[in-house]
Length: 293
Length: 240
Ligand SMILES: Nc1ncnc2c1ncn2[C@@H]1O[C@H](COP(=O)(O)OP(=O)(O)OP(=O)(O)O)[C@@H](O)[C@H]1O
Ligand SMILES: [Mg+2]
Image 1: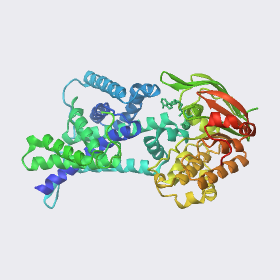
Image 2: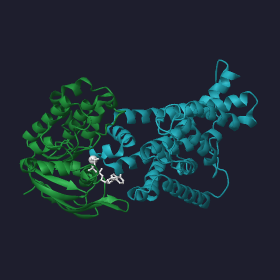
Image 3: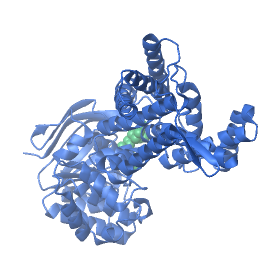
Image 4: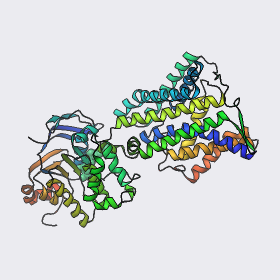
């Protein structure tokens, strides 16, 4: 029973982590919270749904939706953040303009899809073949969701650690002025950061849609709040922290359910977060305190 | 023709104008010093030349081209590289990564060999290459800050107080590095607190006072006028 819940927590946590790494990456580089991250998450889920309903295989739909989400991220930066950055507008104003973009994305989705829930024809995670492994069971789709999330985070880790782009992103995150003086093209690097962050957020949206076999206009709401909790818990701007935070969140949630406290789930979650932050105000892996929210 | 030519440069922060029309020139292969009291605007001048503070008025020409409207990374590519005040290490990244960030920003790919060359010139950096830059001593950090700038093979270096906070022996070493770089033909615009040293080394010098050039001339000429050294630079004459 506990083993099963921990496994569920792991599956759930992987998707939370995937959402949160994109969220925290943008914060790390720009010191701003991108409150349109959840809207892109939702848009990608719908895009994948549309593609799947046109007969595109799910993995391909996931990829295409992630790329689309990445492009949305670049546009988001151009529209909501770049003009403010050019004027040194601080960190609070961009917060508002990203909410504006989130509202626009939501309205467009409502215009295209209406307010009804969408389902994937394949029937989602629960309907897939079940794998039994000792005392635990999970479905093939659950496993694929988990593996996709892990694979994407490993790719991100590799990009950040071992590529020139990754080094530029870390350089800009650490000291934008120093990076610029070394010849790093700030605008291009920030654009690439938005592409990566948003495509990961979009992939998390598609995987969440698959998990519950539904895409809804308001599916971004809960994860936006949880994502925020995760990146604060992990330490603002820390990708490792976001991954750890995602898994902690998944485990706390499923364990709360296991102990019959599912009504208390969020209270327990935020209680745990509160205690951790009292002990470590910068979060688990963070070096700075929250400045932007 | 001057390598760097600045004409009537104005810049500032928010509503405050800090630079009130600066004109100066840096000749090829020359070392030019900028001295002035705290808050005179020396750092602002260099940051404006690197476009991290926007230009409000005036013109800048570099290497025969008008660069008034370019973006910071384009200046680095053009060969105008700035070593900032306080060194600004990418402290969490390794020494090597600091160099690689600079290398990646260069269009040419022959950088691995170039970085090896820099390790030969600065052996201490070679031995520290996988350590976080933040763990280096002040002198080593300044060396890395300069080495990082040299990755771009600059035609001109802007150095902002490279000796700040260093022990006398290290100051000596940094000045040797600067002299060596100049001997290789790199033009240098040097901002220094240590005015005597800077003036002694400089072909030409500017005294900056409250955002304007108060005085200029050959380095040795300015140095010879003790009353100027005392008045503008806040150091008592005939020491050091
Ligand atoms: N980021 C900033 N925002 C607002 N004002 C600034 C900023 N940086 C510098 N100033 C102001 O601009 C003026 C010039 O400062 P600057 O740092 O350029 O002087 P400096 O000559 O480099 O001084 P120091 O010798 O102390 O390095 C000062 O009055 C300073 O307070
Ligand atoms: Mg200064």
